[in-house]
Image (cartoon, rainbow, N blue to C red):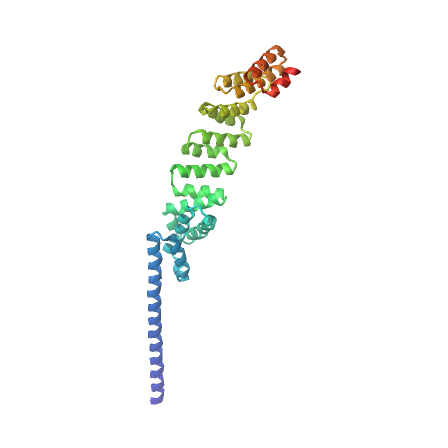
Length: 289
């Protein structure tokens, strides 16, 4: 009986020893994890984002997947992607991987983090995932001009100029936007909307070569032998002063009059064209016929 009691006491002592050692080891590991997390957090706060990425894999797996380090890791990649260097796309993909996982693990927290959705939206846009980009950028609630540009161009890349239009105009109601919207509407065969933005471009332009190219583009929308195209080119002549370009416009007017059967007017236009540019070989060819 005494022997059994002694054995039981020995076993109990062993159990207590194991528990104490385990608790000690657990405590040491907990302290180490806290130190690692503190170092990771400090690196982020101090703007040492590369160091932050180096420390993240050293965190315990359970800690890595907790909300704070997972979020900071994704944002560190987002910040580094702004450098536009050779690692940009690697950072963009890591943003998507880490922050999309965050939205799955912590959906209620995700709703309160506009920066998370903004970072995801930018990364989705950069990697050509435009539908996801629109959803994330919209969820961010960010209404600054750059965000409007990203959403607008995302719709544009999805061949949806109608949805793109208001975002792009809020970003910049100017020539670059007009040119982009013109190309979008034209590609979709929406003639009236395309012509609307072409006319805005014409109104904004002041350089002779640009005006010449724009009016040539406008002519594609008009009857090639109609009165409107004649009026359009005569309007162009009132806005440019370059004799070479003016010579080309008179050449075009001569061709239009010839199509209309008005040969005297055509001859007059070609004569004027040659007087402005004696080296205009196309005009000379017309006059020989």
